[in-house]
Image 1 (cartoon, rainbow, N blue to C red):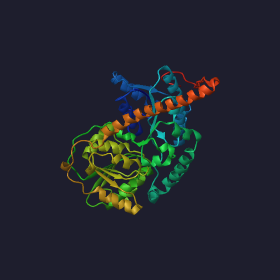
Image 2: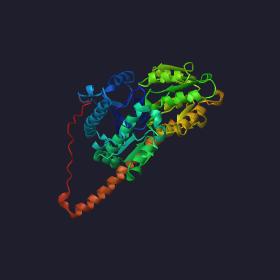
Image 3: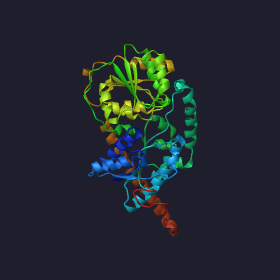
Image 4: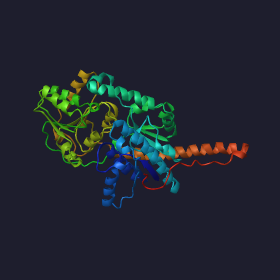
Length: 433
């Protein structure tokens, strides 16, 4: 099987979406001959990887953004426009590659959102769209946790994605995909009824690669690892710690615009001696942090998946998870439910109390089996099955179209020639400038 992947974010040396894209590319490469189109931010790291792994059969192809993107990428809206422009360019590169040597399937792997069209439509090949996200929003009863800075952004995002989801090109992507992989149930609910038929929930963070270290003796220290942004719900973690029984400590790894306000909140709550803010650490330090933590806390309010959650589970750490969005989906993929505590969101006060209770009372580490507890093997089998299903459905559709075409040909032979559409701007090079 020969597969072309659109993975704007794909990097062996970075985390978050880039790590998910990398994991997906390695997963697809386990059962297919993969060619991966990625964004220019990862060019140097991909060259570094290729230099150290010359035997790697996967072909990673850099597709450049337009020159104006360097300035545009300084703002959130600019980064969005750059990605849209990149998808158009990647689509043209894909058409050229497909013309030179056809692919059996095409896959939009990273930054696939239900409210944007996909370049998979550019190729006449069986398509796997996703894992697709973009539908998770903060529970209404927890809007107060966003604060006055976060609430306007929440409302603006809700309106913008709903409007974009009605674009004709977006709706054509919904209909055209042979298989639709979704990050979470929230995304399935946003699709039209016919488009829900060939969908499967399969979160892309399940394919992250992990290093597992032996569990260190428990020390009563919780770990919170996340960008310090309102949508990640860091205030919930501090408010819950203040109500948790015992003398728990919280180690906060990450940085962001909310850090100063969170430090002030920890002092007001009397937690200055229990909470440490460490900023970001190197990726290779994370397995050690996961091994040392009594549990890792995840309070994301708009989590499509949760790369850090998957990493923690893959490294064997117990986790406390706000059961909302993609985080609930990922946490449900555990092979050891005793190491997962799902906290159902309620009112702000109820949610804080539930988190506080879940943070404490973990058993001794001897109770836990050593090793990760994320079911990656099952995810790999389901991913391969999705590609097989896409090829099968496209083949069946082609046979039906051919049968209908044969009937038309017998009744109107003057319409027997198909004219192929010529894509604009396809060069066949490995990069497009």
